[in-house]
Image 1 (cartoon, helix red, strand yellow):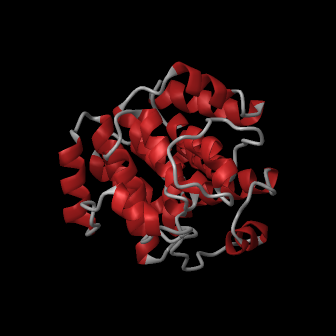
Image 2 (cartoon, rainbow, N blue to C red):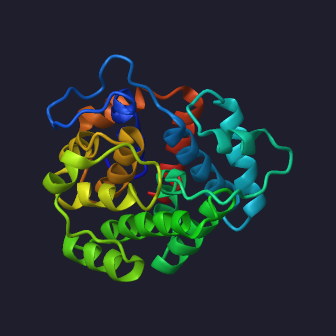
Length: 261
């Protein structure tokens, strides 16, 4: 199985380690207390926007607000929570990684890289309109789209480094000992992409991301969203992911897959 379920799997698997960091790849998937968080809710909100009308920014805002308020305790940051509760919300200059965690549907709904980039930018700027947040969403979306159409890792690495200026040459072994919780795109998206680049398969990607000891659910969602365009997700992981979703969220995932996969 491929697709946006990779972001959802990463979110759920990393959810128990967001505030209980570890620095090892040896841990159990789907530990007790594992659950979907804001990463999943917002990913599926973007997916539903693309199902309804991908040309409309207003439809995107309506979906983000509707999903966010339906799952108001999903773990949003304070500024995004305030955005959700406003009648006519405006972007608030965020540079955080919320733009990258929710972008994966844009790469699957697009028919070209340029369309994917346009959708990714739109998905970010309604809230996260800081240049670093837009860049994080675009870099993640590009990596997913390129993996989806069969690009090799070296091509993906070169494209992201040249276009977005991220340094993807640092190894996880060098990053891990000193890495700390960081919700900025600048301080979490490059590391998440490296988690994919160094991995052997989907499972190894998620283990890489969680083992950094940072914003585990979001970094696993970002890394997982790229990995699930490059590799198939093992059936046992996709099965357990699906069973963590309620019927409403699962139906959005199914509808998106039926239209765009």
